[in-house]
Amino acid sequence: MKNLLLIISFLVCSFVYSQTDSSIVEDTNTYRILKTDGGNIVGKILSQDAREVLLLTNDNREIYIPQHLISKIELIDQSDFNANGDYVGEDKFATRYFITTNGLPIKKGEHYVQWNLFGPDFQFGVADNFGLGVMTSWLGIPIIATAKYSVQLSENAQFAVGALAGTGAWAAPDFGGFLPFGTFSFGDRSKNIAFSFGYGGVWESGDFGGRGLASVAGMLKIAPKLSLVFDSFIIPPGKTTYSDVTYVQPVYNSTTGQYEDVTFTETRENRKPGFALLMPGIRWHVSEKKAFQIGVSGIIADGIVVPIPLPTFQWYRSL
Image 1 (tube, rainbow, N blue to C red):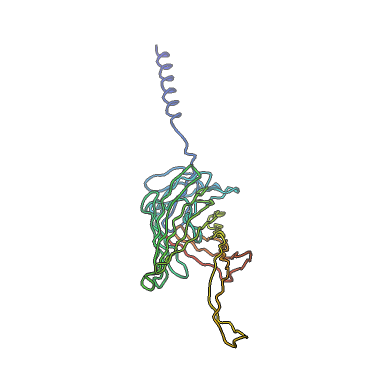
Image 2 (image 1 turned 30 degrees about the vertical axis):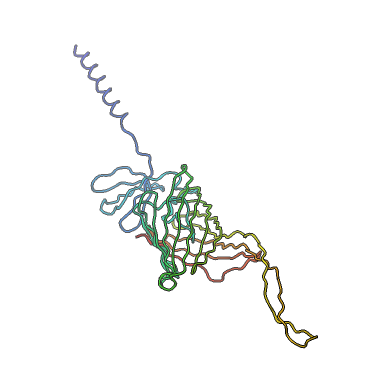
């Protein structure tokens, strides 16, 4: 009887141990720990409590991080690493190139300002897929409002519609313009390419004119602090038209010895040549909420390539 009880006790303990052991699941996820000083560390969490987190980094170091130095813990996946296995992460300002935007929305509650040499551009994520903004010069001429609504088509495809509208403000209230646009983009916040199209209209004192516009742009984050950026602004060639112009010009008559008014009719060609502004550059991520961007520009007009000698400088800041 004693032996039977021992056997039953052994079996019960074995069953309980096996159940307990099978319920232990090792956390194999990779995390990024953002620190209050702006730094971040990537690795696997071995343990954590109310006082500290024990992290195993990619180079197999075990680091204790006090909880009071941690501002956020983010789960990351393999798409956040480059081909060399280095953590790259997303570009904080991935929705913007130099001039144009893409189908990715500004995250709700995440706002930023793009400082240019000519003035500021403020953008606000007011909803999950909707953003508003305003841009101007240091003199407040012009003042342009922007809006964009984004739709996620698939895991790596987006579409957005939006518009820009503005006036010459206090200096030219009779001058204004608008630009409705649509854009398809493919990729994510670390690498993407966008194809945009729109129609730019301008009015001044009752006169109106406009042209179709297009853009191809993209960005690629190649290192934790470095992104490659390309932008373009394209006006396709318009249809050439012809018009007859009639005018009167005095002509000397040798018979009468006097100048006489003569009516002439002339056919004039009205050309609308194409135009393209190309802007490659780099974006340096100074910190989690700051970036500096520099680019060079070139213009293609009427088959002629003209480089712009002055570079473009832009500063991004999260608000």
